[in-house]
Image (cartoon, rainbow, N blue to C red):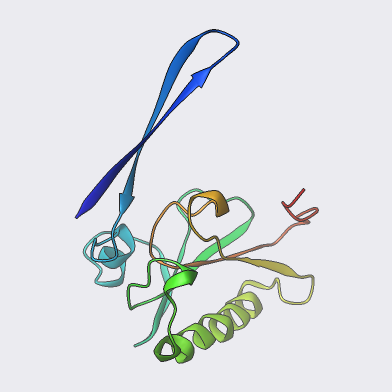
Length: 142
C-alpha cells in the first residue's frame, strides 16, 4: 500500500497557496533493494550472504560508494528490533571487510545511514553507505 500525503502552505509575500505532494512507502511495500537481493534486476553485487547484500551505488558520490543492506526489509532505523541485531552487526563487519578490499581502510572512509525524509532517506529499506577513496571533507551537519 502506498500513502499519498499533501501539505498546503500559504505564502504571505505573494498571497498564494502552494501544495506539496509526496508518496510514502508502507512497511509492506517492496523496494528496488528487494529485487536486487533476489537478483531480479541487475546490480554490481560485491558481497552477499544469508543476512546482508552489498552492491555499488549507481550514482556514486565518491570513488568508492557501496550500499550495504540487510536482506530482511527493515524500512528505517526506527523499525529495528532486537531480532535485527545480528544482521545490523553484520552490516558493520561487511563494511570493514569491503573497505579493506577496496584499499580505503587505512586512509579512512565514511559510513552513512539516513532515516526518514528529513534525514535524507530515499529508499525505505534500511541501508548503509560506505564511501571513501578520496578526502570526503567535513560532516554534512550544520
